Amino acid sequence: MAYSFDFDLGKLPREFFKDIAEVSKKYQLHRRFGNTSRNIVKKFNVDRTLGVPLDDAVTIVEDLMDVYIDNILAIDKVKSCKQKVLLIPHCSRKFMDGRCKAEFDPKISSYFCKACSKDCFANKATQIAKERGYLVYILPGGSCIKKLMNGVEFEAVVGIACGEEIRLGKSFLQGKDIPVLGLPLTKNGCSNTEFNVENLKAILV
Image (tube, rainbow, N blue to C red; front, side, top):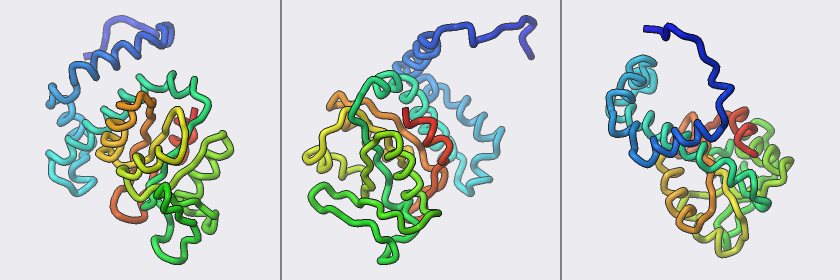
């Protein structure tokens, strides 16, 4: 049933929404009340659309909630940092073989895009991030973050990955007091992964 009164949440300060996110995160409300996630899955037919079991679809929705809640809590810290990096998954490259001209630096386990394909997601992300003053690293996996930190100094991270990789990366970086913003992949897998480019532009604060 709709409310019997009118309101405009835009009149509330940003801290109001941040407090809601903090409470939700602290008590894991979205995971404790599993019916909420299941209702979202059923409303949008997430399991059938993606071709995954219901429980897997619920996990996907809960992971997305985690990412967006964490982003609300971290965005002000990231904005205040000067040295920021964008971490791109190497599986978002158009080619995973010699046709990709990206150079690999084994010292920090990162590829560096050479802009060989205009329609490559890694290339698009690299160009957008560099225009906004970000250092860009294309990593084979989240475990490479530790190695990257040994050779590169940075204050904040924006990472593109699947929900599980974002969670693992955040767990490590937050232990180092480095704020993180995550952008979930819209298509995962071991190759030809994708993300929303417009959402990337919005998150590169």
